[in-house]
Amino acid sequence: MKNRFLAALAAFALAAVNAAAQGVTQPGFELVSSNPNPAPFSTFASVGDGTRVHFDGSSVTHLNDDGSFIQTLHVFPGFLFTGAIAVDPSHDSVLIGESTNGDLFRVEMDGSGATYLDTLPFNYSASYASPGVAYVSAAVCGWACGNDIFRIDTLALATTHKAHVSGPSGPIAFGANGDLYYGTSTDTFPAPPGAGALWRFSAAALSGGALLGDADADVLSAGVDLISSIAVDPVMNDIVIATNRFDASFNVIADELLLLKPNGSIKDVVSESSGFFTMEQTGYILI
Image (cartoon, rainbow, N blue to C red; front, side):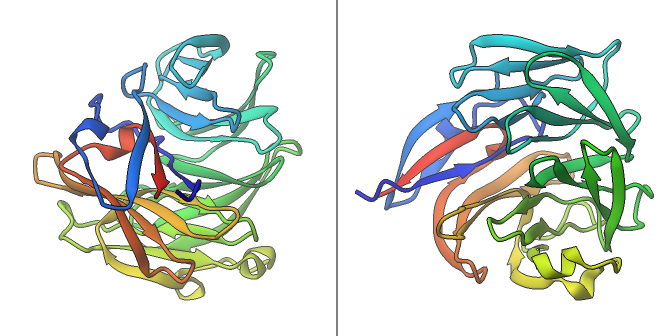
């Protein structure tokens, strides 16, 4: 058995359904853990030590892997719809986004408080490029006018506009080499099968001062269903994506966990289901 662990990281509040039990794990993989979301509709992110941070719209809480309580990190004065979330690689703080007003905060992992960072309406996904430097995917201009990617220095409290791309807001994730991966979306609803794609913005392009667009991205994988979450293996550079397909009533009718090679070609179908895969952090071992 190869002790290679694949993490499909889910921080998207679609429905409070335990999906892993519904999924069909493909040959060559074994489902080794399934962690239900203890706070329905909350977003959450892994701290890296087996614990998780959840935001349920009111409280930011630190939980063990089994969902048991560790500490309340911050409580907001009123309910807010959830948005982007990501844990700083230094594990000293977590970026919390809400989509009621579009505000983003740095919440300290020791529970000492929250610092306002910026307002990015419809913030959807976040990923850290390095300690203290996060990128956020947010459709700040509203509906049917594209999506934007911003760089936020969470210590200097500085925001830089890095990219404007077509389609609604999509998920982002960084590779170990500094490349940024982006899952495209479409303004058509329900999206037709295969309407999604995985793009990559190189570290070199991100380091420049120009505002990036569609033409600056490498298209790694096209013709997949819409991508809801992305994780990049820091050693092998393989990519795990979770895809979803909706019907006109907002029900997820098909989803997959796909393992992609660094060039974007499909290496394996890890698991398939008929709804709501991205509610959980699910671990698979390649055997």
